[in-house]
Length: 91
Image (cartoon, rainbow, N blue to C red; front, top):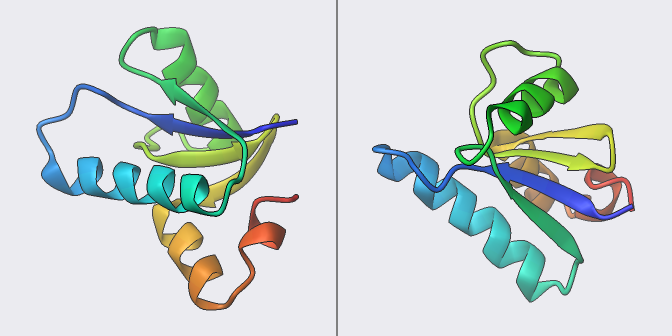
């Protein structure tokens, strides 16, 4: 199953935009196949993201492998720092 990155194309927060872009850039540079899912286009995808994260207030970016939750931006960064990205992404 491909890695899913839940993001939003509509955000007033530059912090969220930077976090989202960094995740997409890292995955692309490491040639990890992923699907970017824009939660601003359909409220069902936002609900799916929050259900997978088991957090009714989760904000993007959130990362899953198929229907298995991997983590948020902070967990992603920690995995990179600890050289455990593949384990984090459940690859």
